[in-house]
Every structure is written in C-alpha cells, then in structure tokens.
Image (tube, rainbow, N blue to C red; front, side, top):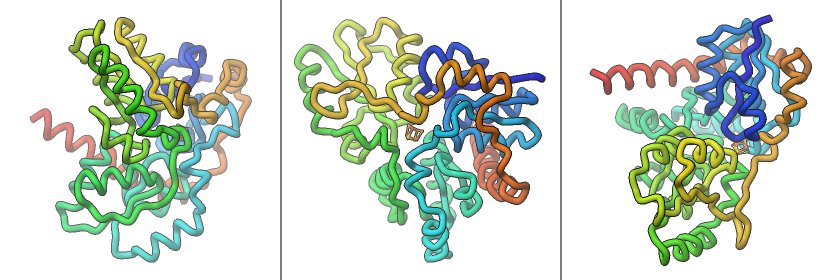
Length: 310
Ligand code: SF4
C-alpha cells in the first residue's frame, strides 16, 4: 500500500522529520490530493484529517490519535450553530477551515487564514451580508481592520487566545532598549495583541516573512505569537535570527497545542502500519456538502493567483 505521511508545523520536530511533507492544513490536504496515495497518515488534528478525506475520498485517512481535536471545534455546539445560521438566513456563512465536517456542511464558504481577507472583501464588494465562524478573535480582527459589522461565532483557539498584549508589550519594550523588536502574530490571537503586531498573518505568511527578513540579526529580536512548533521551522530557515516565542504570562515563553502534541513518534509509526483513528465515519452526503464550500475557496484562490500572475 502506498502510504503518504503528512505533518503539520505544530507537531514536534521528531514527527516532522518522519513526514513526506510538512505544511499547514490546507497545503497538506492539497498535497495529498496531488500525490493520490492509498493511505494518508495525517499528523495533525481531526478537522485536518477530515478535510484530507473530503478532498481524497478514495484514500484511507488515519489520524494517529483520536484525541487530537481542536478547541475551535469542541467549543462549537453544532445545533446552536445551525440555529445561529438560520437566524441569519439572509447572510453568507463564511467558516474558517478549523471547523468540523458537519460545521462545513452548513457553510457557504470555507476560508483559511491566508485567504480570509480577500474572500470576505469580495463578498462585501458584491453587496453580500456575511456571518463568520467559528473563531471570535479572527472575526473581531476582520471587523476592526475593515470596518465590517459581521456577526461572529464565539469560539477561540485555546493556544493563541492565551497571548496577553501587556506581557508581550513589556518584553518588546525591554528588547527595544537593546535594539529593534518586531511582533508577528497569527490572527487567532486576541485583538489587542493583533493591534500591536508589526505583521499579522497565517502560518505560511509568517514563515515567508521571517525567511525574507532583511534587518540586522545582531540587533533584532522577533517575537512570534503562535504555536511554539513553528519556531522550529523558522529557526531552520534563519538560524542566525533571534526568534523568541511571545510570552503568555510573566516569565513563560512556551505555548504548545495539546492536541497537536498527541502525535507522538510511536503513534505515527502505528498509523503508518494502518492502526489509529480511521476517518471512515463521513457519509457521502456529508462529504459532498462539506466539500462544496472548500472547492468554492479553491476556485477563488486559483482565479486570484491567475489574475495576479497575468
Ligand atoms: S493550535 Fe489552536 S486552532 Fe490549531 S489545532 Fe490547536 S487548538 Fe486548534
């Protein structure tokens, strides 16, 4: 059996080293679609493995540990979400990809942190009314940044929501006394953190920013407000830079996703042997309904890339 092993940036370095590809969730699902493996081991969390299954319905998709969920999923009661969606029947429902398969079945668009700005801007340009779920922080940032008035669902990433701008500002002030400090933040972080950031972007956008950073490495400190696993990838790209995890409270510079870290080396090895949590519970109707808003996003992104290249 042809097995493909995929690992998210937030898994531990030892698991990343076992993978055929390392990337963010959508990137990995698209790689899986391109490679057409018989078995996909997804070292990530459940919604990512579900997305991989939707895009690759003929493959056996295995999540190494069944407990690898996500707070954005567990904080979203699906019945309540459906009622909320019905109360806003005149709106387009845009959902962040960090959501369950069932959540996606009641969504018009699925977005990632890379394309959310462009897709929502395009909907507003068409005169549409929009509701956004499930990430409260990302929705608050979009509303603030662009002056939207989108109703936003109330769930958070428990990892990014821990960042506190008071602690971060204190460390930035200390670092600025010795040189120049920058803050890079993922949009799942709280709004006050995002408002103080020099760069707000997706996992991949943060990696690219660090890769292309042209400042003086000796006098610069880069604080990174995201899951700590990404620091490993940043340090591989730019070992000479002073990269530091943004603090979550005084003295603490660590912030790990407990769900991503459930992907241990042993469990990934077992999954490669076909043992683990097989994503075999999505029926054809769910796959079809949940895939439609994802494909809408993929077509949008393809058209946008073609337009930018022209
Ligand atoms: S880092 Fe946050 S959004 Fe990502 S899987 Fe963990 S809890 Fe979910």
